[in-house]
Amino acid sequence: MDVPRIGPREVVYENSYQQVYRVHADFGAFSKEYYVTDYGWRTGLIVVRGESILLVQQYRLLIDGPSWEIPGGRVDRGETPEVSAVRECLEETGVRCKNLTPLITFHPGLDTLHNPTRIFLTHDFSTTDREPQPKEVERHEWVPLSRCLDMINGEEMVDSLSILGLLTYHSVWSRR
Image (cartoon, rainbow, N blue to C red; front, side):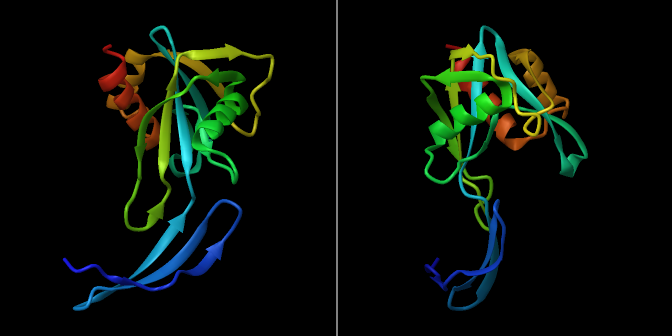
């Protein structure tokens, strides 16, 4: 396959969370026009206490209801994914994490979604007196890994970041 000639990005929409841009790709025999939604980097964190995982519950528009997920969110300008994971967990749960280990990096889409994602793992944390920010989550809870896996298999947990992180942790780390 020939490498296409990629035209410049033309921003068609932008707000503080995302940018949508149009790109023309010329493959020689044909061409395509792509509309890419760019959210930038995001991060997640698997926090392990014994046999349990720290989960947060928050409302999600596209399922019109609460969703159980691992702590995580957008990497802000000037942050590394690791710093963002620590900040997001603290904001969402009041739990301060350190000594993070990279677990997995992935791209949720490869054509029209730019949202590279890095998930970390830690067993090293401390609780704080800091209350979770109410705009962030409804509540947080320590959930046994076996229950998390049941939630995935029973379609009670549908967030791809959480599913991929938990299944990676289960297959690679929890059996050590």
